[in-house]
Amino acid sequence: MSEILKDRAVILRSFDFGESSMIAVSLTREHGKLRLLAKGARNGRSPFHAGLRTGNMAEIVYYNKPQRGLQLLKEIDSRSLFDTGAGDMERVCIFQAGLEVMDRTTIEHESERGAFDAIEDFIGAIGSCEDPWVLFFALQTRLACIAGVLPDLEECGMCKKALAGKGMNIDPSSGAVLCEECARGPALALSAGSGDLLRALREDGPAGRGTGVCDGARRREIGRLLHNLFLHHFDGYRLPNALKMIKGVD
Image 1 (cartoon, rainbow, N blue to C red):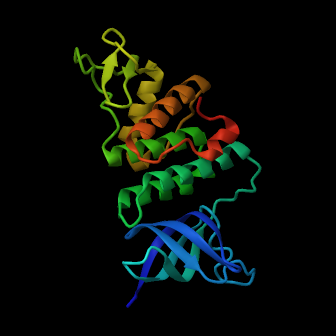
Image 2 (image 1 turned 120 degrees about the horizontal axis):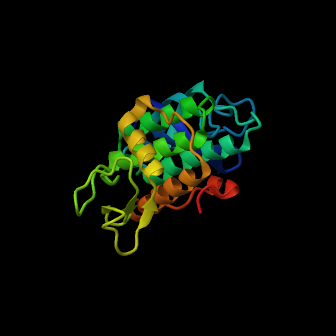
Image 3 (image 1 turned 90 degrees about the horizontal axis):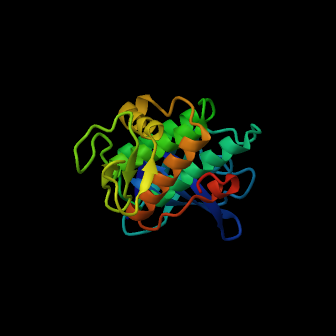
């Protein structure tokens, strides 16, 4: 026996199924990540056709059977859609990368409202933010905070000196943070400017939405750190394909 449920959702990706249908992998606010079967969605006249575009924010109604891995989509009502035809290829790739990160760091049927709110904020700001890279790092930072894997950037783990305005070295696997004087063994270096920006993204939370601009050097440092942090702490994570197109992370 199935029940009819309604929820807010973002379409993380979708693909063809059978001759006329589609499967959409969506993140919902109340019920976590779901796989939805949209029958007949490949027909241009189907009410599902436009609603299943990647990155679409929508209200969905679906038939839910807890023991089934694929739920049947009943209705979809689009709420917002990022214009991928705006001509800014870097912004489009970062938008797609954010969706990939969310898909690879969430587990099906496990609800985490913080993650949904993070991707909703990301989609809402990507079209108008000053620097999409900072917004992307803000999304990753929020997800790392939710998972409890973002290292403490306030003080050196050995000598306890404050790290504000200073460079540091971080071990992504253990989360150990050391000042430049105490650094030893393999670790990733983070300059004072990169550390301050990452700390600001963590402290600003949803209100910050990745405001400001990140130069090339800081982008590489922060991108490399977050990428390696996710590799060590999220099973199945890998560099988003969209970033490979613009060589976003070394």
